[in-house]
Image 1 (spheres, rainbow, N blue to C red):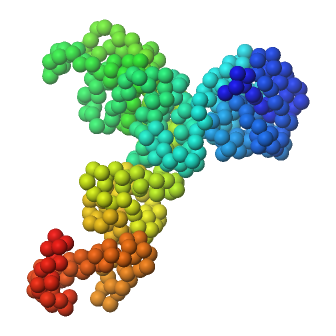
Image 2: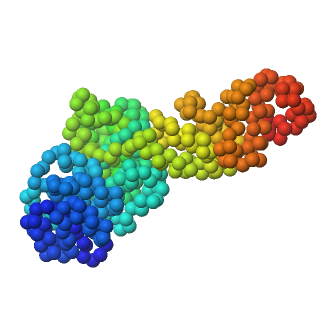
Image 3: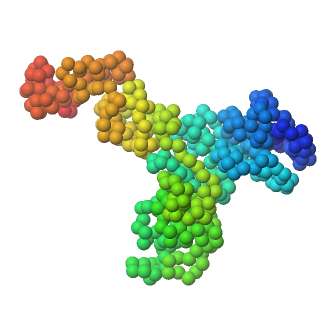
Length: 460
């Protein structure tokens, strides 16, 4: 960032443009002005800005539409939206789409200067690379994931509590870890706990600790999650499973920043950032009376929605490649790629278990595959083989040629392809003859000696 940050003001009202331009200039910034969203887009093509301040309601291109265009070009540019017609819907939509802040006219000079200062300070030293394949251990470069990476960079340095919601297996804990890594307390503890994995009668002790002798089995003092995470981050996974009693106690910790151990008398003060996650719709849980509304708003200062894998199919090849390398190394195998047919099967699949299911599919495929490439028949999708081209194991007596396609041959290479066909036919012959090698050899019209040699060669 330059010594004097350059800020673009976008407003169709001349008096507001002039006011903000003078204010910025007096406070050491380099102001630029645009009278419309379209004019702002033209300037963005010609010049780099450190911050954009835009009105929401403009005749040609709204501030929300401008925000969307800016984020497509450079996720790292903070955008502050202002409006004279405040509405909760606009505010929620603005923040969800990546706005840094939302101010209502008329605003105080000190307020706008404070927002400008913090917004400029939030900008990462290095802009987010849209061509990178991963971020803080999270794999993916789809537009949906790039928005999440940008949000992590913006909220990481703050102390705001974060609620990550999404289906099981979408990678919510990885996002929680990334937020901690980008925080000012990254060197301190990140303490995770899965709320549903702990019996209800023990969850209070796990969160707050207990004093020796406070209940049967409490043979020593125990340090709880909040004390362990002091000056760091606590990750509460599946937070929607907490009982009403524990919700009340958790709310007190968030409000007072202090608690007592179970059976203890000493008040322990803590400074902990709470990052929570859920696969439930907590707003519906609040309406149903199963989750405290005041606790929900304390936890969801910044909500992040993790998209299911079916909404970011473009990331599937990257994830497959990542998991292939991981499990090939783990299993000491040379499975380095996936056939085009097998990848098409995965691209056509909806992944009800999301990234976790994809990892399981690739892990199993690497474990089962005898060649150096994952083939369709090595994939197991929810216990069925729907959508896969038939292989020798599935083909009938008159349709075995259906597996012998040019695509698979080109993926494997001729020598490996023929070897693979030979091995599979040997296995099929044994299955049909109930493991009689003599009958299997006759079925394949080969000598018993040749059959025995090949079976030994392929370790069948």
